[in-house]
Length: 495
Image (cartoon, rainbow, N blue to C red; front, top):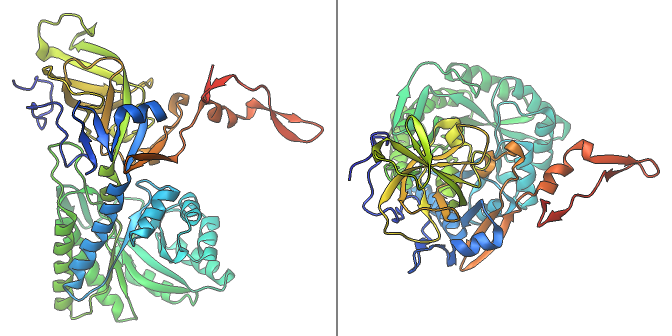
């Protein structure tokens, strides 16, 4: 059978709509004999019964393994060229106290970019010296706290931050180590990159400005200049963009060495993952080997020592280790030019789009709405031999753009009450989650060796109401805020 005309060109008609493509799922995710999706020994049905849906499900062993493998890949590649490397987990992808601990236990440092992320890392017991602090507009208060607790390195994103960080370091009698974020003129996305002379973005400064900025940093006795930092994009397939960016940074790095030490260089992150079976990301080991070779060759050409080279992966570690579990609500067969409810007769299947609506949506996965991101979907509670049909997985929000999976195939007997699993939702899903339409954010659970535990509690309607100032009244005798009324709830949901 061929794809309907409205299917995207990259999507192939499946030989089996139940197959779990290994590149999309954690290594602990399989199907049981009766067809249920099982992760680390726990079935989707049990997880839904215990924790409800929507639900983010994290394969803990898979996360830990990817973190350790990533660190080992970069260490091995750079050791071959006689150099050292450091790997920071990019907390913006997804950060919780437990995730921070897993990264630290695997030997990774942690990259943060807000006061809130700093608070999470500190609550996890992470040594502040193992933190890198990013951000294009860090507040004076955030800078002051970062310096005061001993954050290992602050990335200076603008000329304004040189004085701000220096002043904070003087107040706390510290020498603050800093990197300078620059734009290499290399833009990378998925499998392509474009090298240009100019950057039009809010982050960093140009390479041409770097020598003057570095001189200003070195003039501050409370700052220690470590080197340059660059981030070329995200969801990148291949190593060419990183290699070209490294060449450009090293040219400036060599010039800066004439004025003083430059012990490090940070090439950022953005390593891509598979969201559909059509995606073919480059293994992290291959990227590490290629970049290490380019750095070594370029340093030899420039007759300089190889600096410590740092990287900041996030998505590639946490993304494939997680799926989101949903319950199916309504199903509509929508004719292109009219619509009929599921079950009605359609004479031309090629002109029908089947909408399967679930109990989550853009509030738990904003990436399709923000970036036109593609995802995949599978039945989670059972297998089926029904003929596959092209579906679009929609959320419950009052937005036409509330789409979770734009196009994939499910067995044609998908029905209300079924469970669906959307893989590769570990990165930038919970971290971008919202309360749009006053929908509570889902819980996050980690599964390991047949046991599940909550990493982040799901919100309830009562939680949402408690943030509304009109819900409280002032007790004049004690000046305490008291609820105007206590709503009737069952399991935290309003009656």
